[in-house]
Length: 294
Image (cartoon, rainbow, N blue to C red; front, side, top):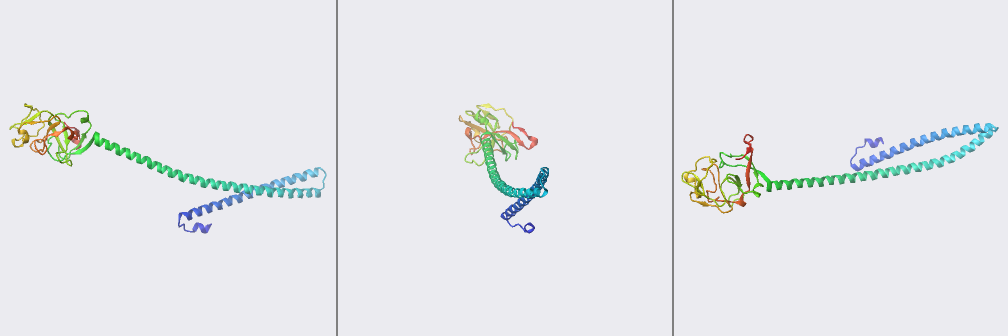
């Protein structure tokens, strides 16, 4: 056994073999101890029985020799009984140990199988959880809202470059866009780029900008103070003449009126209702400017 302990273990199978060998040795030691204790108990019992028989025969008037002869007979009979009992006990002990070993192996097999099932179960629930998170994120980004970042200065002084905004995508599914809403949309023939502008004209209205930079809606002066500067005459674009909006079209401009590519340019034009992605409602960063967008 000592040689086996000092030997270097080279594989798991060898480790298992050593483990089971040590377990068998331990069983043999326990069995030897049980047999020794059983033998000691038996001898004490036989001795007490023998003394009791001698005392009983003396009381009946038998001679010591006759008593001893009877004692020898009883002892021989007891030896036969002991051998039979010992053999039966050994058989029962071996059966119990074999049963325990089989039960132990069966338990280990069940434990490994249970552990394997538990791991698969955990992986299954993890996959479901990840799938739910992905679906929820997709639904939020597609139908509820998303974060976007401003690039450029076309919306000064309302929005500045690198402002982080939250875009509301769900409101316009139930209500129509309103004048002065800040919206995002892709320009014509360029879905990879996103513009952010303010709604000036609504469907069915006529928009025009005069030489002084005044904005007229259906012939009436639009009262607003979102513009950074007065619109230069050269920046009136197509709105230098009346622009009639369709039933689902919006006229948009950047607040930095003299530095914005918007509906005044023929390359952008009027924005259709189904082209609007959402409404900019909150500025998330920088933190000092955090709040609702007006």
